[in-house]
Each structure stands twice: as C-alpha cells, then as structure tokens.
Image 1 (cartoon, rainbow, N blue to C red):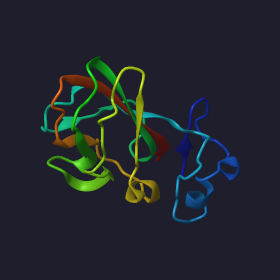
Image 2: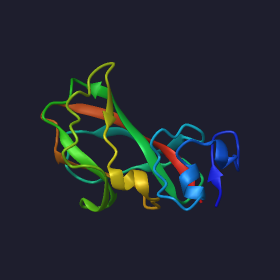
Image 3: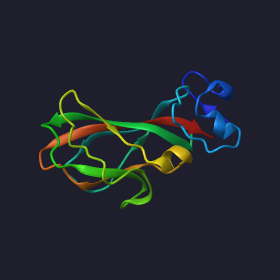
Image 4: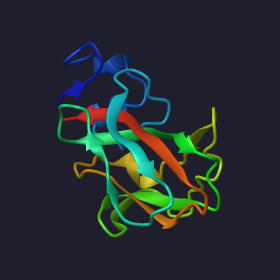
Length: 155
C-alpha cells in the first residue's frame, strides 16, 4: 500500500498518526491524521438554493481516498437560510453518506467557515467514487458556496 501525501510520493507511514493502523491491517481511522492530508475534491460556486445533485471536481491524482474534513465557505449572496443536506458517494443521496443529510449549512456567511461533520463510515473506510452534494433543503436566500473535501489518498 502506498499513501500519497503532499511533497512525498511514499511517506513513512510509521510516523503518520492515524494512517499507521491501515498499514498494519487496522481500521484506518483518520482521527488526528496530519501527514499527507491534501485537497481531494472541490465544489466551486455551488448554488445552495437548489436540491439537485452537484458533483465535486476531483483534485488529487489517486483513485482511493479517505476524507478527514470538509469545509464550506460562502462566495456570493447573503447568509444561507434554512439550508441542510449531505454529501454522498452516489447520486440521489445513494451510497455512503460522507456527511449526513442533517448537516446544516445555515451559517454560511461572509467570513464564516462551516466545518461539516464527516460521518464515521467515511473515516473508517476508503472510497473511490466522486462525492455528490445533495441538499435536503435548499437555502431560501440566494447563496453560493465553495466546498472542499480534504483527506488522504490511499492507493
């Protein structure tokens, strides 16, 4: 197994908190992982008023990944109002929920970063599908956002 990180193609996993359990056959929890974290996917200027599926754009060069944290920032419009939804591994809220449907995006406002709660399934297994944002409830106020998925490439 190779873990691809920033600035190194094959880091010494014995020094990587959280990834060593994978190398040793463990569960691979990414809790506390610091070395090799990179931007995996981005979703730029997504309309937070719509409940249609929005596919992320792949940024990293690998195939398999484990997300460690997901953040959203407002780009245009006012603050997000009554907005909730999840990030999934398949369209139409299918596959694994990387972020639960109950995730609130209401605090998207100027200068505010929303730290989405990454589901435990996402932290304990690898994924290969392109993530999909699918809001359950779109914002009632005009709002666009950038959403970034950070994590570890596991190939």
